[in-house]
Image (cartoon, rainbow over all chains, first blue to last red; front, side):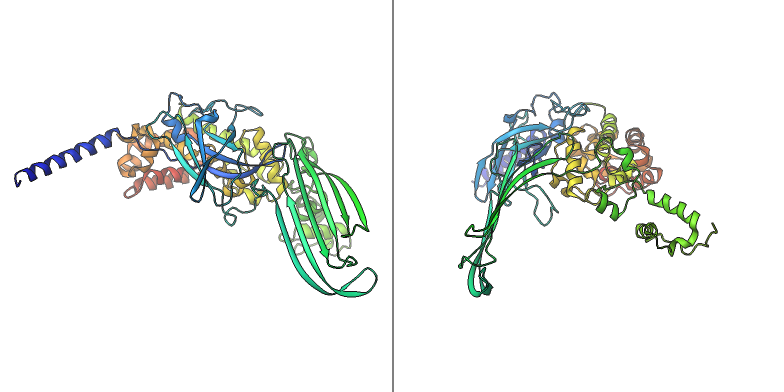
Length: 351
Length: 176
């Protein structure tokens, strides 16, 4: 037995050495993907969606022959993990990022100038803030399929996002409150109980080519004569009309009244939200001064600082008198250039 | 695979496309490539309308799907573009053929983990760095790869001990 033990030890040590040698040569280092999970708004339908951005450069380097087809939905396996449970997600579309020219998309992936290096997987599923999304590249020509996990950015870390999470199906809040000495419509006062109800649904029909939203803000009272009782509901649809410019149009129908509907009114609203100037108005926008008043009164967000030129001309013409002028334009100029207002210190110039 | 220098050149062309998508904002439109690459997105596109307009225009050209979450998750336009077209990866591809064996034939992920002094023996005077520098100059725009910046990067190559190749690549890809 004593002779067998050293032999066994040597054999085991040799086996381990051989095994590690094989591993170091033959084992392939796995590729870790870093998928980015985000809530987004689809254009032009304005529908909220969840999508996963996957950068593929590391994987593409391991597939120089391009055997793996990045444009197919079945090339990806996406799993949504909620705590201990997980479910397979349905990929609605695979969108290859980048293109050979305006309005065109790449159709292949690869480490070439003319090919895409990242994809966006648009999911048909919804996810919650704490869910994880695991992405695996299926059918990838490697012993270990590239994979990675991502999460929605935390609300605190992710700064203001105007895209709503499609998993937030609706919100409903009901807040009861006591209102002592509440004024009634007959002129008397009475202690009443009130219930404030707020309801919002950002997207009623997920598959529609437009976004339909419903919201309601109500205050119900225990006394129907309560002057504060109110009911207001709004149903609206919105869609971006122009593919190249942000210009969502919305049509809303609002119904407002008191809780007994003794006073009831309905309002129809048609509106458009956009950013001026539009294409082709470049020559105009370059001739507006840029400061806060401009944003306030014209809606133009960034234009050439013509004010400096106007100020220089006025100063050259009127000298320091401009500071004492009751003219609106001088006040405007002072408002425009508060930090650089060195005009007062300059010697006045006779006209 | 294309020549890595072409990939780096193409990255700057796409950066131009991103800047064109912001041409409604004359502050951003007038910047040079380096200023634009390092410009803060949310500070320069503060309103929802501007952000949405940028997103729609980027979808047209260069063809990226963006959400407002992308704009807040990536502080600068360079970081935003890196999320789709990673400049550090292309810089690593450019540097890789000049590095010492066996790194010159390894995958980029392995090269980035390699010790800098092993991958680039001889410091800034060695053939690994001089060859890399020549290719990097051909790929990166001069305004984003100034002489001062090149000196700073060369200093990193000289003080290579204890550093990884990824430290050098990330420094270069920050531009300056």
